[in-house]
Amino acid sequence: MDDIPKARRSDATKATILAAARERFAHDGYERATIRAIATQAEIDPAMVMRYFGSKEGLFAAAAQFDLRLPDLAALPREEIGQVLVGHFLDVWESGDNFFALLRAAVTNEAAAERMQRIFATQVVPAIAPAIADPKTIPIRAGLIATQMLGLALCRYVLRLPPVVALQREQLIELIGPAIQQRLTGPLA
Amino acid sequence: MDDIPKARRSDATKATILAAARERFAHDGYERATIRAIATQAEIDPAMVMRYFGSKEGLFAAAAQFDLRLPDLAALPREEIGQVLVGHFLDVWESGDNFFALLRAAVTNEAAAERMQRIFATQVVPAIAPAIADPKTIPIRAGLIATQMLGLALCRYVLRLPPVVALQREQLIELIGPAIQQRLTGPLA
DNA sequence: AGTATAGGCCAACAAGTGTTGACAAACCAG
DNA sequence: CTGGTTTGTCAACACTTGTTGGCCTATACT
Image 1 (tube, each protein chain N blue to C red):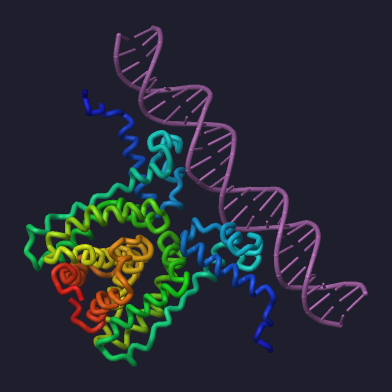
Image 2: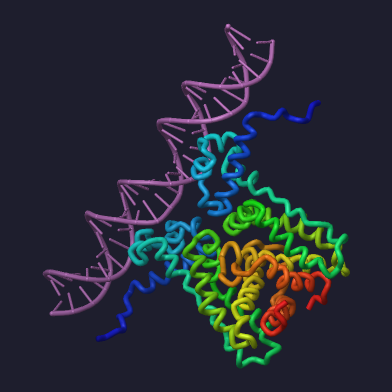
């Protein structure tokens, strides 16, 4: 009846493996991040990875869990939503390797791409919905916002286009915030 | 003194290999597109790929050549530039596998990412420059346009976010064209 | 004609992949 | 202490990867 599993000593190892996995997946993508490289970085044996996560896919599934933790937009002043959103994305992206593990993998791995679609559908769309007047336009507006924000992540962190890398956090908020705002509350076309 | 090399019989084979390579690279990314798979699709022996392109890297370098063929924006009415640009990107992307080979590879392959940076610097920036009033803002505006356009490619063709996939060409032009226009001729922030 | 050369295929290599099973050490309950 | 379970290591597996060299065949030149 006791649902709470005892804290096993191996939990620490699992966490170490997960952290190493996230870092390798984020830097190298799914295929180039080898189990051996992950194990080496975590300073354990490759066999442990298999024992605790079953397979490379299982490891990735566990490592690429990702929560955007989007704030309640209804509690914000209408005109600030865009900028807050941009700032929040920057925070979440840079607060760990989860997002980049997922993004890099999603480009060559179908399962990762599907997970990205799920995150969009279950986290982005619902969070954004309350800020949009006409409910019929929610999916389109959410989609357009995704193109802008993911495009920013792609150009800044993955492709590293110099002018996009050079922009400071404050500038990004000031430059892209209004565009997001417009996609939320402005006319569609 | 005759610079023009005779058309060898093997040129056809090379072209077949390149076409197959582009398709595999575009669909699978750099690492998962194996030389054997490419050779099988081209209906030749894997050894031929090595003979004609030296290595997998060499093959990719030859396959991922990419020309955006951006039009002369100075010849266009000021207010149409954004929409024309979006339409042009859609055309070029969908006219072959080159762009997606490059995009998918650039996410996990450093050399491909650098090539993307070069294309941005040598094709996008110069083409866009004449449409921008204040020359100091050219790199930033070009960078912001890149985030929007590459984000569209990412969400629509790679991640396949349903609402972005659902949009028709005409709608995309109508929805994203003005955003690009604003990035070119509007105030920066 | 004959011969050099280009085009192409085959089999194999060395290295690296995910994955497995057997076995040792550490831990904990009785 | 003793027995069993957990945690970890080692070596090896079956397979795939990029890459190589040898060999055959068709073409092209003289």
